[in-house]
Image (cartoon, rainbow, N blue to C red):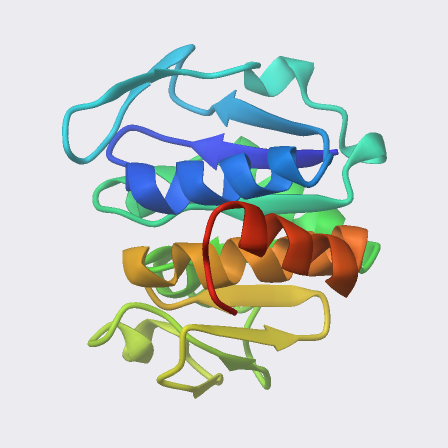
Length: 181
């Protein structure tokens, strides 16, 4: 199971492209409405989440994913539930993915990227204190996967597919959506 955390002000492209790619690859994915069942994106698109925080079962989670967007990333960081999920997933070495502002505003503030290579939205690198910032679409360092921004959502999503389903399935999913890896 992959849980995708949605908070008011999230970037819809960063959230939904990986959800779509993972589901096309056969991965069980649920969106989690951190700030309610209906979550409004940074561009005023209301999305109905699959589940609420009390319905999340981290024992079944292979990965959690934090979309960026502002103020979405700040709202994720402000959630004790989200921070607790990140800490639990980190403790067991399970995958934690984040994109755009989330690597800086959420993972960076929590000290999760200290000593790691990571990427985030250009200009937000200082929030990833202790990390080596890379100006590339995505970076995987251990069980952390970070993406640069909305334009990297396909590359990041397909990397998530590859980690969970293998390269052959990720390549097939990329071909099905006419994306060249």
